[in-house]
Image (cartoon, rainbow, N blue to C red; front, top):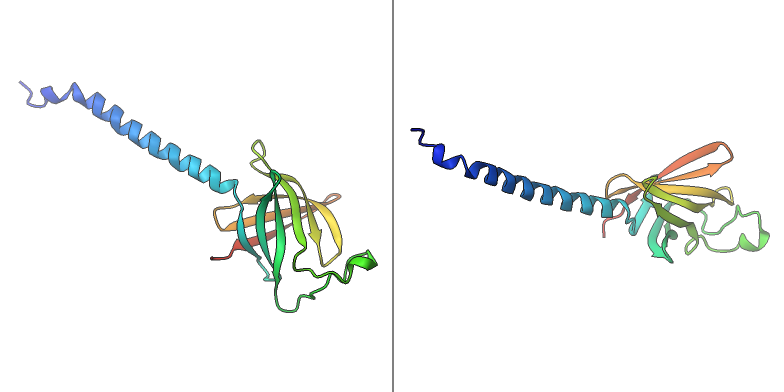
Length: 154
């Protein structure tokens, strides 16, 4: 008689239990990862150091307000085509707004981006690449440009 024969009936149960625990753990990780991919809240710095942006939710969308400028960045909105806005401070200005999570596209879409160096508003979308990298893509006609932000440690 096989001494392990008595263990055979419990093996499927043990395997099922192990698989269930593993799947629950993976599911929780997936949920956590999904939430991380859809929550860009926090302080971010543009890759070239020009701007620090505070990203916050606003009426079901996301916006990023300039909270600090890097060295050599003019403090005023001097490139704005509207002469009355050329005297406004860039700190406190929204760099992007109206970004809404689009689950089908797996990114934030329908937003607008202000390009202070050109004084123009353009359409925008964004996505997170991991917890510490935010990519923002601006569209003008057939041209696109992607800028990268890195999360600033609290």
